[in-house]
Length: 283
Ligand code: AMP
Image (tube, rainbow, N blue to C red; front, side):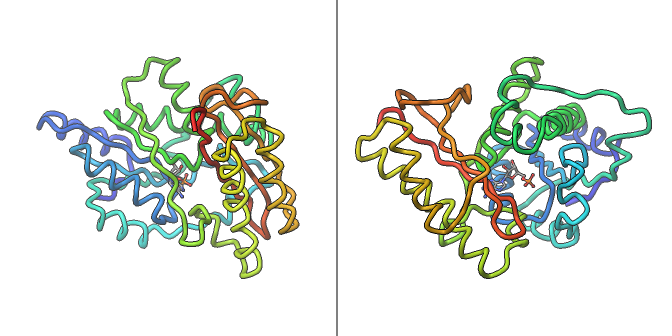
């Protein structure tokens, strides 16, 4: 595995691979790798010829009051884990390589970014995501790019950019990888102390409770949401949001007729955590 810092080096390596007839897979990340990241790398390794993982803590997707300066960083550990997964290129640029002096362009996706994390974290968040992902697509020009369903709204934003700007890349959404007790893996889980770590399991337990109610035949949002809300309340967790939304448009759902997403965000101890389940329309 090679660690590359510059756009020019990545372009050169990708060009050689393409000339040799290889397809290119890209896994965009902010590092602090866990099994969730590794599952994306495995999917890329299984499906594409040259596997590029980007490691870039993207400053433009953090608000001033968020954890940019304290975000966990350990490039040497990450490089070891990526290499063990058979990754070919770890692209780990400095911020000025991505945002040189005079950088003036931002990609804004309207509509689906107004709600959920876009409302909680501010519009800049998905502008930052859309802009950096579009740049990574321009740098690497992957055939396939891999994202986690853990960040369900992010997947929809990226798909929208790809469709609206006619980018020639296939987006693969990979399932959420969880700890044995159900907590969705996240680089931010390291912020949890023992009490918060125990409390954090309530997010997935709440979504599970709602999914059980759905499987028992409930279609109304009120019934589904109150099952989840009850579990959060037992742990004294007040969510930033707990919402049922259409799995493609993110429009609010009052009654499930087709696939919906049940999404939750909450502050748990020192961490802000998100999770979601897909609730089937035909279950
Ligand atoms: P991040 O480094 O947090 O920006 O995440 C990089 C990619 O890994 C994103 O596409 C995330 O959705 C994905 N990811 C993060 N956590 C998980 C998880 N628990 N399961 C699956 N994918 C994940």
